[in-house]
Amino acid sequence: MQEIIKINQNEQGEARVNARDLHDALNVKARFNDWITRMIEYGFTEGVDFYSFLSKTQNGGRPSVEYNLTISMAKEVAMLQRNDKGKEVRNYFIQVEDRYKKLANDPSYQMALGLKASQLLLDQKDQIIAEMKPKALFADAVATSHTSVLVGELAKILKQNGVDTGATRLFSWLRDNGCLIRRRGTDYNMPTQKSMELELFEIKETSIARSNGSVTVSKTPKVTGKGQQYFINKFLQAA
Image (cartoon, rainbow, N blue to C red; front, side):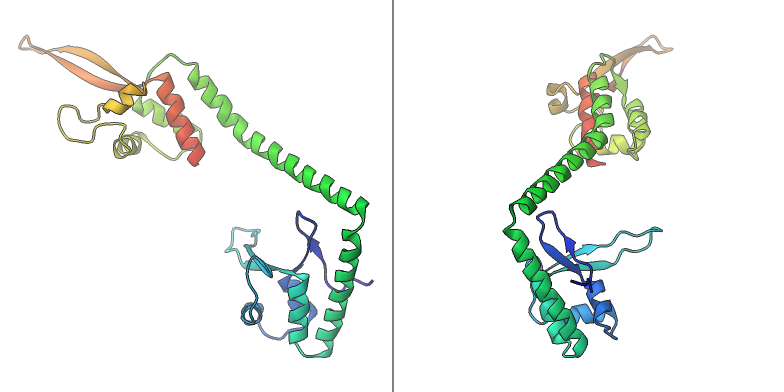
């Protein structure tokens, strides 16, 4: 059988046709976007008859919407053209359907599909592990730390690991998310009761002697090792 249009397979081994390839094979004069919209309006359902996705761009341009069609939909679309080219393409899809029906009953083909699916799962697993490993090692290293750091120092650590933040923005985030007290007063920017119970912060107190002989106590929140791990995991998982 001569290939008129490239037939793709999804992970389950089901045949799919790229709508742009079909558009070209049918020699449609109308713009692709206008044509595919009109075809879909004949009563086809996304997720059943076709699947839309965004194309990957080469130079950072705006991605376009692409469509993968089932053989059944592609065959009907070919019939809708009502010309000799449409008949030719329709007959081609009938042959494709027959071939896939025969393959569906072939044990060796089903085994090959199973092996392919297993390999895809392994590839995805390896990719996820590769992406998470640096983050996991970093978080584990922080977990073993017994040294508390200032919020500004935590912001620098996050910045070095790809999180776009600074001391001011991190303080603001900590207040907005209930980690530091946002009410203006003597306790402003101090850890909330919940943060202290979770052992995310400790308070460093420094005595300051005044020239008049009085002594005041300055309080500074510091992020514990446990707190560093908590916030690093939270920000890196969201990145």
